[in-house]
Length: 498
Image 1 (cartoon, rainbow, N blue to C red):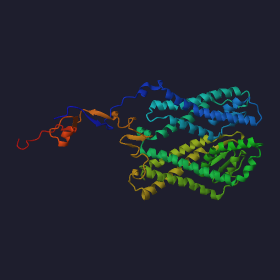
Image 2 (image 1 turned 60 degrees about the horizontal axis):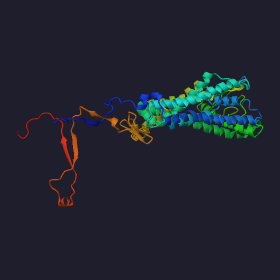
Image 3 (image 1 turned 135 degrees about the vertical axis):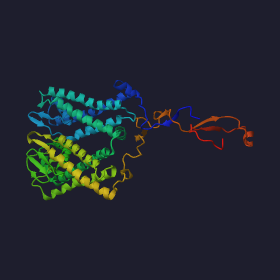
Image 4 (image 1 turned 90 degrees about the vertical axis):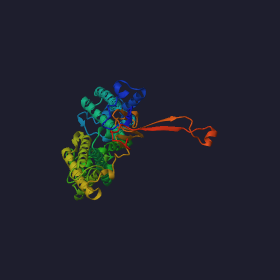
């Protein structure tokens, strides 16, 4: 006897029909709930408001400590906003393109944090687009106002209005990077599943982050060590401060430029060189020249290069080997196909080159300050790729056997997060259609299902035979009446002679 009704069976990846769009996707960008609007206002306004508050306090403090009037306060605030966002400024005839990285890094972190908070587990592509748009739109509005203020203030202070296209490009780039990074970190496992990124790409991306962080950390340690060695010269840099306000200003200026020094030290550690106008610094040679008299610059070496500075080259070599070991443990890399290792080296080199580009620039009469970027890119990739491949080979021979699955050792995307199209993110399970797993959308009626099925119903009726206790107490048990319905079977021959 064939089954007369459809059977409810779980969906599989290949048989899933298209899922209807949710209400948010159908409405699109034209509808926002009040709660989501409030969240987007915070994303657009809170980082910009905090930055403006700090800039106003510092600008007014600098003007008051210098005994100046407040006529140029608006222009100073506008210039501070543009400088924080790495927009080159021209004051009089002096071009200032070497701008501090620390304020920009703090703004990127703050914006990424706001964007990550705004992401919900069931956020759609439309919701993510709203978040990115809000993160960029708020600072763009403030930038437009600051450009207009700088245009008006050019008659009071010697500030030439910057190029509007360059200003908007810097602001959009910084906040777009912050928004994408914050959202990606928040739903990284969901993105890996939905985008179906290959394992070697995921491992290469994470390996690039680890290698870049290690290089920056080692460069920071070298910078601090060099500063401590030359700390007796710090007193000379404060002689021009004049008073306590000048000392505080020089100290804050040095802290703001500390990330720039760390990025430039990476170039020295990997064997490249740093240009500082007519001067240059590297592991193999040092060319003297004028440098600014601020406390941070005492870390810059003077005199001829010492022979033992070559020991610094072991730092990128060791970091490259560690990157290869990581890729061997966490990726399907083989000796004849080290794709994750090469991807890690290439992405780390690109990220550090971008940092080197932002960390440099023109510094008035001193000239250009920065890394020799073409050589720096080649050297960083070589240090991370060649020793990285050596670390991969060593791991495949002695640590992770050749042909063994990396999941047997460490797999950051194992069944703890997703299984058979489902993944886990922030306390909720999701499947590959983007909603909660094990819901009605993950099942369907299959007309072609022809297997056996179990039908049952709960009936209340007097049993034919009851025990004495049940009879006298007046209670009867529930009976589950079930029958097994078999599907149509092929015709067979006679059984038992019938």
